[in-house]
Picture: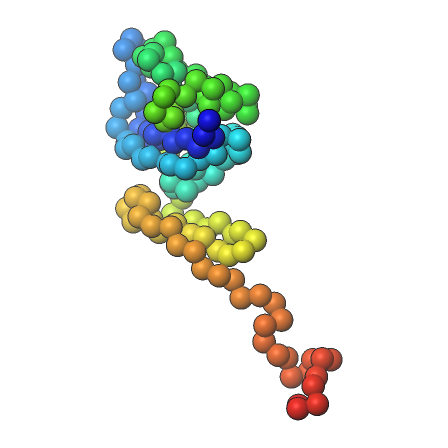
Length: 155
């Protein structure tokens, strides 16, 4: 069985009040190729960050085949994330709703993620994630220093 899954992220909107709950406004973005063995609340925070949202946010998932009134689960721990994963439908796509606690906050800065082998960054244009690029970091010691203790006879 595959451990990969996708999330349909509803963000930038808000839940209405009253019966027939709905997420009003905002947009929907798909995040594919997620590994269920590595998924955690921290990873969801990273997804929200990549979409341009700063804390505090709350995450909710909709139990498949249930309405938002009956099937909306607030995610407060990694156990809740595991519940979302175990309830994945055959499409292996979860529906995640981002709620902005204390108001809406959009990060204006370029978002960056430093990894051991390179620098990955997201290009964001009007809130749309348009492209992920990878740039190799230049390692320390790649340039010979004139006062280096390591010299050769050719110096």
